[in-house]
Amino acid sequence: MLSTKKQTLIALSLFFLAALAGLFLRFLNVNPLDEVNFRYFVHAHSHVALLGWIHLALMLLINKLVLKNYVPLKVYSRIFYATLFAVVGMLLSFPFQGYAAISIGFSTLFILVSYVFYWAFIHYIPKEDRQTSGLKCIRFALVYMVLSSLGTWAIGAVMTTLGPVSDWYRIAIYFYLHFQYNGWMILALVGLILLVFENHDIYFGKRNFSRFLLTFHVGILLSFFISVLFTSPPDIFYLLAVIGAALQLMSFNFLFSFFRKIKWFLLQKFTRLQRNLFRWFVVLLASKLVMQLLAGFPQIAPWITQYKNLSIGFLHWVFLGVTCIGLFLLLDFIGMFKINLLQFSLYVVAFLGTEALIFLKPLSNIFDFPLPNNYNWWLFYTSLLLVLVIGSMWMRQIQLSIKKTTRRQSL
Image (cartoon, rainbow, N blue to C red; front, top):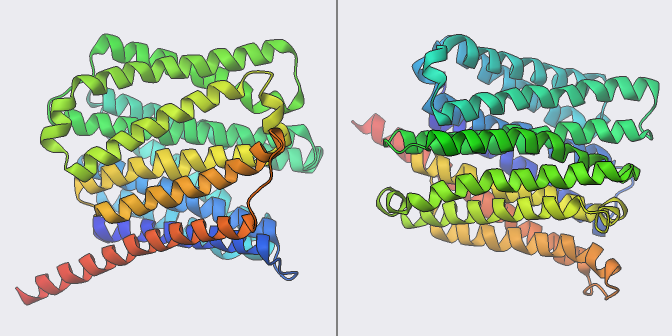
């Protein structure tokens, strides 16, 4: 079995490849190539980013902090290699055929292996050991991971019966995405952060944690109605969507209150870089919750339907912002991955630059002002900076791995 740092390097490599695919998509916006199917590369980019980098990184963290003490190495190694095999298969098949037999086969394998990962967590960790706040969050995150896959299964059924132009096709995709990022990814990050605190004897109070979980669960279920507002449903759907988003905001307010109470821990145990990562994680997460709340109002929801860049910008905010910075924090704190202050600063500049440009396009239509000259080229340049920063992180991990191997051989 590969070392934890080498597994992390593989996940980071997939992040770099996903970023390169995203940059290529930006290039196609300014210089379309007839022989390249844009949508096929979108599928490759999104699947490798979500399932190769984010899913794999979360899996590595959960194993490092929890599973390695319970799950046999043979079981985990099979899960890891099967997951990696499925992701590489998607990376090599989606650009050439989109959703077709081979890519669907690898996607199906990935889902089945994710079920095995959930099974390993439940099967090997005794119930009495799963009662801490951190482990409860991770367990529920895995439940939402499994729940999100129902959307994937539904896509196939809708494709064969109603076709891809059906509203139900989009609803199935939104169902998958909603429970992936709101449930699996964000709640897993929260659980891992709480687990780090618990390893230093700092605990979320039982009463406030119960409030956090209750409002989170109800909020995530109701906020799914935001995903169906593109169909212009009855007013009750807008009300439920706003209530759900408000409950999610309330839920994380309990968590943020807990964070404010333990500032002393952050000052003592976190480096300056890690404190900056933590602050950005909280700010971006709070901003995401506010954007989600606004999206439920009938005055704003039609804009999201009409201007797809609002949805794209939001998803990038969640994945490149909240999720990636949360992963950087945890990986750096545990020592699985090292990032320096310059790299992080440039990452934030590139991320905010791309986000500003993505949101600028729909806002120019809504408020009737012109876009900058060479808009698509500016978007390409900011994306290029993002790729260069991620590439520098990747190269630094390779260098550290080589130095460690050389040092071990010299002893």
